[in-house]
Image (tube, rainbow, N blue to C red; front, side):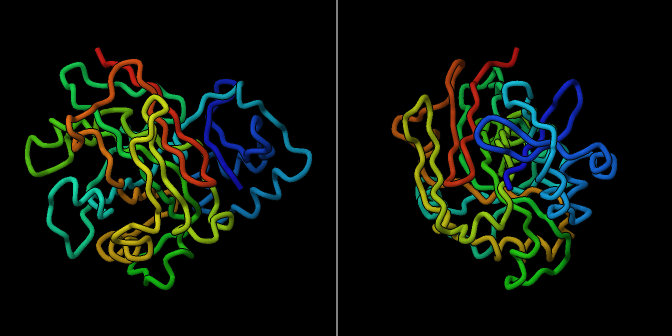
Length: 284
């Protein structure tokens, strides 16, 4: 299934994509029990959602909704840095024995089609196309061999960075947490539709020009390793989001550097997961 969160008729809800331009809504009873996608995951109710939208479901047109982040309010957003050799090489950093992690706040998320605002006091607004996965079954001390059983599905993610604020100190937090700077969407593709995540290709485009192109199979720390490592220090819960890192090709490391500016359009496309596209604006 491809499942999106969105606003429709003034109400936050979710639905299953049918075709290219409409979503099927669960019935009212299902929505009372599971008011958002995170609660569907917590109840292990993805199969029930499929049934609830299989026959006689209400359909809404994509043109009549306003997209929300795939999981609008995850309990945790954990990001992996420096997780492709090409990105490590362009940053001239040393290899690491363990995944490099940082956290994002919930209000830093944005949705498909949202305008992503560059702070007016920074010119170093950079793209970072990534694959994200969403936890479907919680757990602690999850073994590598069991990692995929805990994943609900996958989505595109753009870990947009305010580079000067990111480098005020050795800590990434400020440059990674400006409001609405992490587009996440356009929908969640359930794990059963992605038999081998390592065969997916990620591409980031700025105004149609390819900036990043890589195989997810090139991750330094693969998804089972990430799940095992993260779940050792914190419990993972349904709806938690983990972004797996960006490949080489970020604007900050180009010669000369290149950044996103007002009026640009940035798109992250991953095989089978759709295209996450956002226009760049400027924050007052």
